[in-house]
Length: 236
Image (cartoon, rainbow, N blue to C red):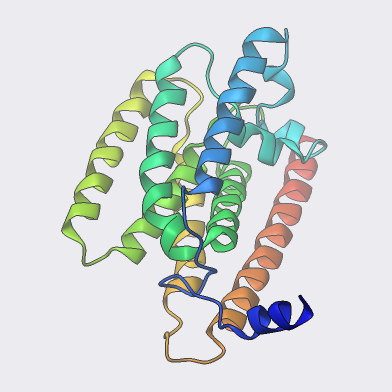
């Protein structure tokens, strides 16, 4: 048995197109993200006042920073379309990106985009404005898909459909902000470029990718902290 285990360790790990561990089967992270959003939406209907404990308002998030993440998994109870369109977008882009990036890199990209969307709201929205939804994270996936599939016409066509739907959604559903979209989109571009732009021929590709993503995470969290301090000062 030890010989077999040792032999298995010596077998080179198969990699995805952009250096992640290659795994067969469904895009698990994508499905988990969708399931979490749907589960939270159900809790919003079941538990009175639950939505108010998740929503992102800069003045409140400055003292309750978990809202920067929880708001990205909650959706407007006034329109099921809000949840449905966001989940459709996550499914489309997740099934395109996760198999190519790998689970770790895709999950990292998603969380960074969600936080980037919240940072955009902290910096650009009114302190008492309330925002919720996965739109910031979805904007990050949207731009990451453009980076990954910039020469693929079919993927670009699907991106166009989602873009039009989200523009329409922004006019018919309250609580969706361009600030969150902008923050998520910028973060998604930077995060995906940190993964995609490292040449496959570089023997240190995986290490460089993870170092860049770690550095981006530190910069993003520092920016969030400074933005929260600024909000505290402005409303204090």
